[in-house]
Length: 274
Image (cartoon, rainbow, N blue to C red; front, side):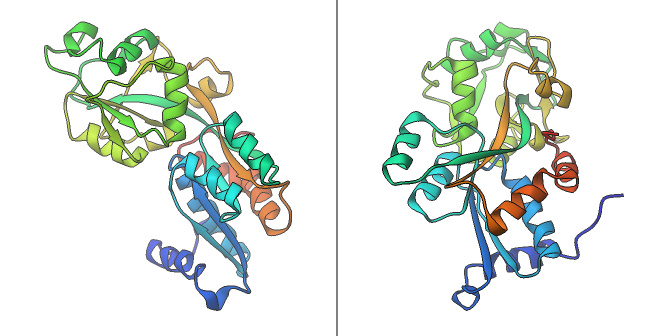
């Protein structure tokens, strides 16, 4: 049976908020920001770690992978959650500022195309997904669905999930101008759940009964498909530090990659790296 934390959700929010208080400046503090995909893992890991280490104060925010990476380069965060690898221009900027980022893989993920459960479509190829998001397919009838317009829901361009989707699916083609751009996985999930003719994409940990996951080219998203890379839109989930991790940050990352932490990753719906 999973070990339960004594921290209730409201109390967790209070503890995370107290990490910003000047009165606690002397406490051992870790500031984490970045990817909304990695956010549930980071929040749960922070809760568990603070229970084990009462002297630790960990603040966690979901601002997007790009913003998280910028924060460790600027020195305003200790850990950047990222659902993509750093770009060459980000690495160059970091080096110019004397920052040597180190990536730690904490989970694996599949980016899953999702539709409303009322939609009869079950599978789309990469080519069909590209055509939908590039605006060449605008009616579900063109891909085996009803004779209804396709409502495309996408992540915004600061998102690591968008970057990976752009690389694997769009192939750098422009997203159709009428796509609904959302700031988080949760917002995409909500938009698709509320529209019978919408399609979006989320990390595997965000799947829920209000969404219908589509297979891609006949391959369903799963832990095994992420590990053996048979799923065509798989990726690692990363935590970047501005230098090789040490002290409390290293202890936090070691715990997250350890047996208890990886069990927690699975409980949050993602794929353990071990």
